[in-house]
Length: 206
Image (cartoon, rainbow, N blue to C red; front, side, top):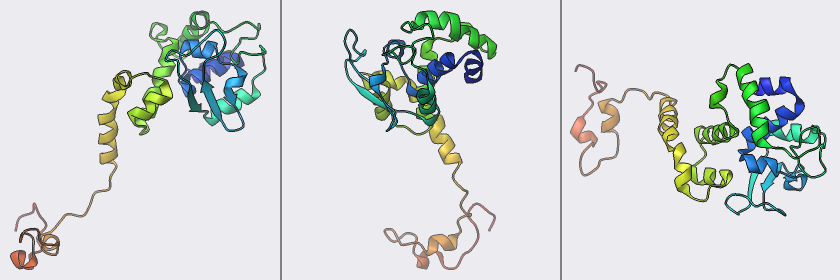
């Protein structure tokens, strides 16, 4: 959908990047202000401000990916405070943006619009992190969950990740009885005196 968003307008592209690479909730995207950004150090802070507080009432910080950082640096300031304000200078309304922009661009990208909401991108953010090796406790803090129980919805992704990691290990050479014979003895088992010079690979006819 990034390509579809980029084709539609720079503003659409920026909003999708923010949702996808910062894992923002809709209200967090609406209330993101320029003071929340530390572009020099590549950090985005979700924090309380006058008239609005985050869902968990706690500040969290997300490192800004280069693709989003570059877009933020180049973004025109349509509003003196709100980062994701549309070109008409009003505050972003994610409900309207979803209906008028996200769902149409999903159709343009060949995705069922009924399955796309602003939270779709937040869930993609969480999925990417888990599949990249981020532990669930760190992900809980990045997504601003108040409890690890909420983050556990991503737990089903872990077995596949672990399986892929194991499958990527190089195959060791077939062990031989000589290898075992030369290994340190454990309670008298595995010493060379017990195996002699047998060299037949394990699992093969002897």
